Structure formats: C-alpha cells, structure tokens
Image (cartoon, rainbow, N blue to C red; front, side, top):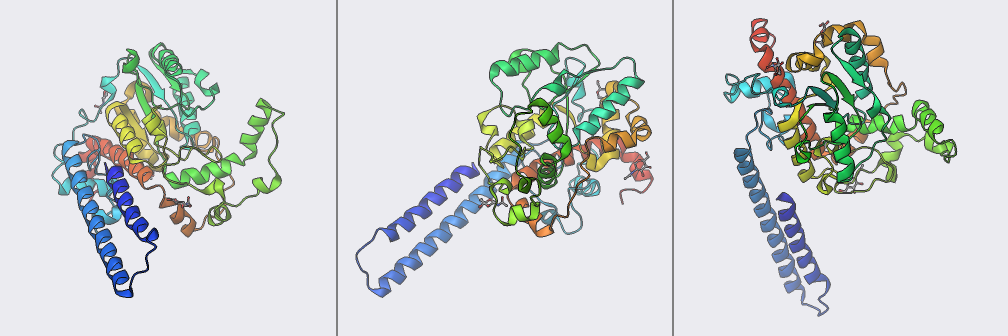
Amino acid sequence: MSLNTDRSYKMKLRDVENAFKYRRIPYPKRSVELIALLAISCTFFLFMHTNKLNSRLKEMEVKLQPSEFSALGLTGNHISGHDAGKHDDINTLHGTYQYLKSTGQLQRLSADRLNNTKNAEVEVLFFNRAAKVGSEAMLELFIALVDYNDDLELERSGLREPTVRQMTKRAQREAAELVAGLDEGTFYIRHINWLDFSEFDLPLPIYINMVRDPVERVISWFYYARSSYKNAIEYRKSPNKKIKPESWYKKNFNECVRSGDPECQYVPHTVKDFIPNFKRQSLFYCGHHDDCLPFNSPTAVQMAKEHVERDYAVVGSWEDTNITLTVLERYIPRFFRGAKLMYEMHTNKITNRNKNKRKPYIEPEVKEMIRRNFTHEYEFYHFCKQRLYKQYLALNLHELQKHGLLN
Ligand SMILES: *[C@@H]1O[C@H](CO)[C@@H](O)[C@H](O)[C@H]1NC(C)=O
Ligand SMILES: *[C@@H]1O[C@H](CO)[C@@H](O)[C@H](O)[C@H]1NC(C)=O
Ligand SMILES: *[C@@H]1O[C@H](CO)[C@@H](O)[C@H](O)[C@H]1NC(C)=O
C-alpha cells in the first residue's frame, strides 16, 4: 500500500518537474517565482498527505493483524528502539518485557498459545537454514543430540543440495515430499526457502530457523566468499572454473562500500545481484513467490512475517544463545531435550564450525551506510527477535521476576 502511494506521489512530482522542463515560452521573472512557489507548496501538501495516509494505513493494519507472537503486532515492528521510548530498546529481552508490561500484555502471555509445535502433523524437524546465520553450528548441535538420543536421526541429503533462490512448483513439491516422508524423529537441514506443505496436501513438519543482524550477515558473506574454506570446496566441485584475480580476494569491505563498487551496493527493490550474496534474509522465510525477490521490499517482508507467525515453531539466534537453547528445549522437547547440556559439552566444536577467522575492522559509518538500505530486513529481523523473547518470557516469567532479573 505504501508502495502505491509512494509511486503516485513520485509521479505527481515528476509531472510538476516536467511541466517546468517542457515550457519553452519565456516567462517574466515574477511568474517564474510564483510557479516555483506553487510547485513547492504542492509538493509539500502531497508529502504531508502521503505521510498522514501512510501512518493511518499502518495503524489500521496493526489493528487488523494482531500477533500472538510479536510484542508489537505483525505489522507494528517498524518501531525502532529509538522511537519506542527513551527508557529502553524494545529489541532486547528487557525492552520486550517492559513493552509487554506497559501495554498490559504480560498477564496474558501463554506458552501454549505461543507453541506452534503442536500444529505440526508429522514429527520431522525441518530446518530450512538461511545463509550466514550460523547453521553449521546448529548442525553440530543436531549431531550431538542424535548421538545422545536413540530416538533421533539426522538426514544428511539436504546438505549436498545446491542453494537455489527460486524453485519451480515441481521442485518445491519434490522437496516437500521428501521432508514429509522422513521417519518421525528426523532432523532435516537444507538451504531452501520456505515450503508450503499444505499447498501439496502434505503433513506440516516442525519448522525452525535462525536469524542474524542483517548488516553483520552481509559482511560475513563478503569475507566468507573470499575464504579458503569455501574456495577449496568450490574448486573440488569444478576444478576448471576460472579463478578470480588476487585483487578480488584482497578487496576491503570499507573500500568496497565507499567506492560504490557494485559488489557492495545493496539497492532496494533490485531483483538481480551483481554477485550472489544472500542479502535477503527474509527470502528464506518468504518462499518461492516472485514477490519475494525484490530486495528490502515491504511486501516480501510481510509475507515472511506471516509465515513465521503461522508456521515456525522457533526462530532463534546465536546472538541470544541461552534464550534460543531454552526456547528450543521447551517448545520442541522431542528434538531438543538436553540441548543446553549438549551445547555446554560441545561448545568448542559447535562454535568453531565454519567460523571465519578473518574479521577485519568495519568502520561504523560504513555499517550505517548499508544499514539505511536494509530497513525492512531489520523490521523482519526484529520481529523474529521479539517473538523469541516473548516465547522465552512466557516460560520463565515467574522465575525471572523472582530473581529480580527483569526490573
Ligand atoms: C542504497 O540504496 C540507494 C538507492 O536507494 C543507492 O543509490 C545506494 O548506492 C545504496 N547504498 C549502498 C551502500 O548499498
Ligand atoms: C548462559 O547459561 C550458562 C549456564 O547455563 C551461563 O554460565 C552463562 O553465563 C549464560 N550466559 C548468559 C549470556 O546469560
Ligand atoms: C509445545 O508443544 C509440544 C508438542 O505438543 C509439547 O511437547 C511441548 O511441551 C509444548 N511446549 C510448551 C512450552 O508449551
């Protein structure tokens, strides 16, 4: 909706500009000034109007789409920590707690209502891992859990599948059939976008995934693409591939962004990437629809949020390891019983898996430059984090209050 109003506003602006451009008749100075004044006030009026309309629509949407999971409702997560209040940042555990408390939602928290695991129709764990969110570490945890619990197994075939951005309906169906056909108690892990099992009349598995700060993700990808680990794997797959020049390997991220190098341009609404870089974290949650592709698009992010809300049992983050492990353990006990203990026993193995040791310094201004182009991606990321905190609070509220951890 905001897209359309934006567009019509831009069109009107262009009309005004064109009206100026294509007039060849010389005007006396006064009337030029008058026209300019008129144009400016016209633009201003339109600007005010679209702004007001936009926020009205947003308000209506929030009212129409309450969210069981996220503190701010399904469409209300654009509120950044800065706007939400001076006292606290809503995008922290404590901030989410404060927000829920001040809006009277705390008493109504219910772990049962925040539990999507019970909607699953087959006890298969489907981890459609997003790129650069630490999924290899999660795989290491799966391995530890499978070793520890005889009722669990790990299906590895998905690990060998190449990452495809958008799949045909037929390929989607085949992928979904494979997952739905696995034995109960199986972990399945693959880089693949959200799949709609009900569309294919297949039983719903237990969906999980992980998120990570969007800008940290793209920086991580930039250096991962240059790592010897990744390049060794690719060389083994296709030894005849042309090797990139040394200057490419030595490229510095700060320079790359500042100089406008196309590799480090993250332009909203673009569909093609100069070099594949997985900058769309929300794509893994949005799915295979064409509308999911434009980068940082509100439509794609909205679809992604709806899928998270309805389908995902847990979307965790290694930025909140303890919270994530607790939520996994309690909401999906069949698979994650003992996860915290396993994590503690295997911390080194888990945290070192596929970790890129090369972490050069990134200037804060450079991060800020890219952050500005990831607004909706941040909205999605914060939505998932608030949801995770809410699930955690619903479990531990009394405990946390008793120990004074939330005051
Ligand atoms: C951000 O997006 C704008 C277009 O909206 C583009 O001109 C700019 O180069 C982008 N900056 C980065 C660092 O991606
Ligand atoms: C996470 O939990 C472990 C023990 O379960 C504890 O030692 C550690 O301090 C916790 N970390 C944080 C950041 O709370
Ligand atoms: C969520 O549902 C699953 C499956 O019914 C159940 O095993 C688990 O204990 C529930 N967790 C919570 C916190 O309600």
